[in-house]
Length: 279
Image (cartoon, rainbow, N blue to C red; front, side, top):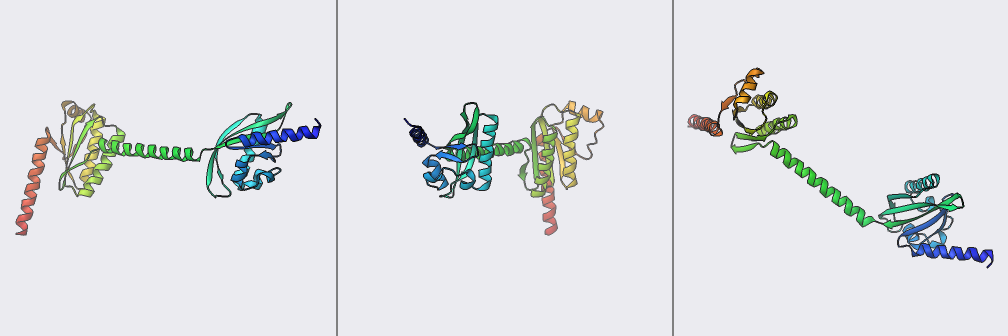
């Protein structure tokens, strides 16, 4: 077989092999000119397949995409190694963005790299499904975070003007800060005059925790709410005394029932006084 016929046969075989690929497939020379590519790539680029030979990525794609493709080719040839990449590409005919999973490899002639070859699979649906999953997961995480914050700093409206804060577990710096923010927000929103802070269920209460809680109480007092503290255990009282922590005019009750009884009594007296003054 003559040399020309051998070359023509190899070209035909290469063309058939590229066309047999399910996705995009191509071969380029060292300068980035297409030696051949299949009809899938030609359709995406909106160029007849027979006219692809000799063109470069700069002739087919927007400048930014074309330069990215050429950088990938240069890296494959420089490192003499294959490269996998997921990347977007603009379909020239339909105007939509297609996401591709691409593998590029060097083309060898003896000991010399003389170009690159590659294939790519359309993963657009998979990509957006993954994005949707990530967004859904992030939304779930954010929802759980908000719920955790709400549970860690519960501020309950008992009735008009009265709030209760039942705390359970440990109180660290983050939780104490969240407590103060949530409490002040609720006081202003509800126009609350009384706040009952129940720390019966708080564990590992030491002087530092007591100081954090009393800071929240003092902050509430500054915005006009009277504070009652329920559930101070002996170890907490000891820590407060030893550290000389000023509790100011905070009302102390041993049980929640006692605190609510006092608050309700004040609320009833206030309502009666208002009624008497209006009559």
